[in-house]
Image 1 (cartoon, rainbow, N blue to C red):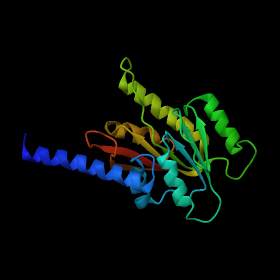
Image 2 (image 1 turned 60 degrees about the horizontal axis):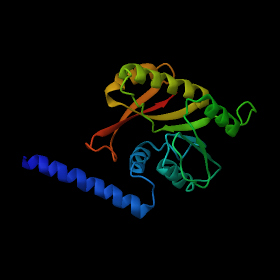
Image 3 (image 1 turned 135 degrees about the vertical axis):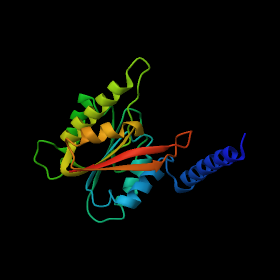
Image 4 (image 1 turned 180 degrees about the vertical axis):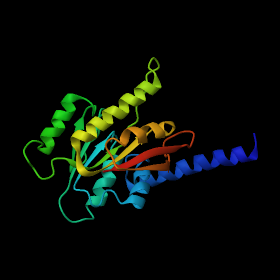
Length: 212
């Protein structure tokens, strides 16, 4: 085993340990919160948004951080979280347990936001989608990825406000396809690479930040 490999391996374990210690001392539920912190520090997404939706939020560290940012600002805000996995209660967060593509889940979301009642903030000004398509062994990965992209576009068309922002996590190798499809709904698309806090191989996570 080469010295360079040993050094790289040691650094990955050391970095992971730092994240774990930060999570414990700062009372977050998972280390992936530092991915959102890194993005927020550069793009300032959360501060000026009134209605915020988190997709794939369990165990809840992203919405924890959203509340942390919003409580430092003046004005009202609404935070909603959706995940097919259960999530422990967080004060000031409306949690819907279900798959975001499911019709029943979307109906519950419409009711929660008062859509159809001409309320001022019935759609979301920011959607944080920390979701990534899972591919069953008997399915074609390309087909599954395309279906996931189409589902996300259909969802944001329905629930994102006209000047809203979408932060979407996806497979890095499909960056070109994502940008091509998202051009149908968004005028501006930025690719963001962030060091992953949860991948065993120390790889980077890819996000696309989209706005009209």
